[in-house]
Length: 309
Image 1 (cartoon, rainbow, N blue to C red):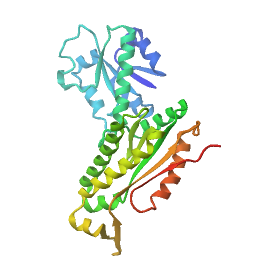
Image 2 (image 1 turned 90 degrees about the horizontal axis):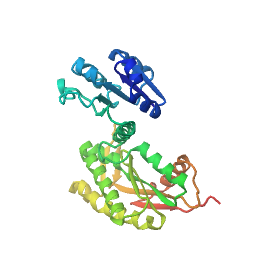
Image 3 (image 1 turned 30 degrees about the horizontal axis):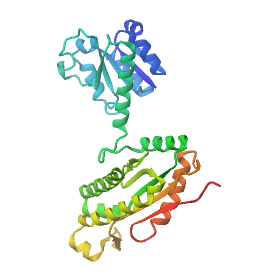
Image 4 (image 1 turned 90 degrees about the vertical axis):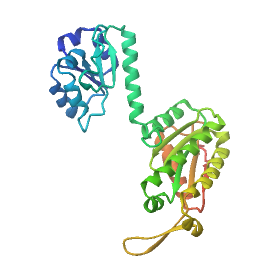
C-alpha cells in the first residue's frame, strides 16, 4: 500500500506519525506542494492522502478541495492531520472536504488504529453495491477464499434472475432496480431468519447474487428463496403480461420475441473435505451448473454433489 503526506517534508519525516505510516504502508511519499500530488496520482496512485493542518490553514482548504474534485482519483480518502491545539473550526473553514482526521498528539498505537480504521472503512464503502448496499465482487471473492483457506464446510450459492433483461427493457431501469432490491431483501431476510453460522450475502452486480450458508441448510434456504421470489415477482408485471404469462416484444428486425415471467436460478457447490482450494475453481463449477439450470423452465436450484475424490 502507498500513502502521500502533504506538508512540511522535514517535519513530516521526523514526527511520530512517520513511523506509524512506514509501519502500515510499503511506500510513504512526502511532498510540500499540492501540485506535486497530481504527478503521483497519475503515475503511482496512493491508497490514502494525509494533509497537514498547516496546509489546510494556509489556503483555507483550496488544495484539498481541488484534489477531491479530481474526476479520476477524487474517491481517494483524504485525512487531515491536526494538533490538539488547532482551532476547532479548522476542518470546516472554507468548506474543506476531508474524509476524516487524526490528532498528531495521540500515541503511536492510537494513530495506527485510526489510520487502519479509515482504510478499512473506505475499502468497504468502495466495494459496496450502491443499489443494495451489499458487499461487492471483491468482498465476495475474499470471503469465499477465506472460507476455502480455513477449510470450512459450507454451501456456496450463485443466484441469477432469469429473463431480467427483457423485463428491464419493457418496464424501465427504475422497475428493474426495484426487482433487484426485492431479490436482495428476499435473500438477506431468508438467511437472517435462519440465523445460520458462517452465513454471507453479496451482490456481484446486476441481477447476480452470492450467498454462503451451512451445507445442512442449503436446500431449505434455496426452496424458501424460490417460493418468496415466485410470489413477489408477479407484483412487478401489469395485468396484461401476467395474463399472457409472458412479455411479447419485437427486435430491431421486426421479429416477435416472447419472454416468460422472471424466474430465479440458484447454482450451489459444496466445500466438503476441502474440495476447493481457490475461488476460481468454485466459479468454474458454478458456471457449469448455471448453464444447465438456466435452460430449465421455472425457478430451480441445483446442488452439485460431486466430490474431489
